[in-house]
Image (cartoon, rainbow, N blue to C red; front, side, top):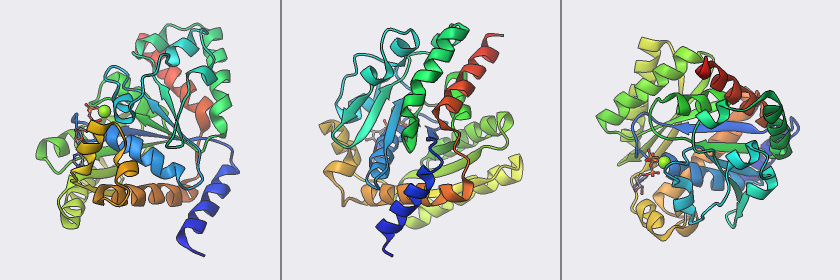
Length: 288
Ligand SMILES: Nc1ncnc2c1ncn2[C@@H]1O[C@H](COP(=O)(O)OP(=O)(O)OP(=O)(O)O)[C@@H](O)[C@H]1O
Ligand SMILES: [Mg+2]
């Protein structure tokens, strides 16, 4: 069986569970490539006959929109407030993924009454036939970011080889581990010059997390430093579409394949209702 068929088979098996797998992309330091990777990983996953939604949780800076050249008029807040139906705010882009613009502040979630929450959870259940939801977050360890990370089934922490980025990656891993010791933490090293550099940085983060935090971090791979990434941002077309053979695109495709092949082992997607329930719960704690 060739690899594409194999991956498709895995996707179909995973779909039996009928629950969306939620994966948050986070980093300690800003500007390490979260949004670029969130968009391209979502598109790469969608190429394996997978339905994917990308949630832009970092609405303040509207990263995903810029990369894809779209301007959403409405966001999750309109759904929460009952002004729009979920279907009406979802944007389908030609790259075969769906985009949802997040609410522009976590506090907006905290101010809902029980009925609004229940209606909202019901509304998002519509999307629960999707295979994946990728959540692009803002940088750092604010409660806003952590809430999305903690609500997701998995988190991918992005770092670059820069020492400050590595230190901050350790910082966010520490915060995640202290609030959710059971969470699967995956690592992507972005902007590397060589395979050896990618391995060395990943090993360093994995070792420190294991030694000082007793947390298992899994290496999901690396992405090369590649001019096609900033070029594509300028053209508002994702690099994985404009430059599918570029070094960065090849790396991202491998990462997407690993995501698909790993999930059968882990097998604990909790779906969109589960994700948003956890998000609301943490907003309640926040309020107290
Ligand atoms: N592999 C790469 N090679 C070259 N440039 C890259 C690579 N990945 C990201 N960049 C560049 O780094 C910059 C920041 O990327 P991006 O906006 O994706 O980061 P971010 O982590 O989402 O930032 P923020 O924390 O502000 O949300 C962009 O200009 C992008 O083009
Ligand atoms: Mg970003």
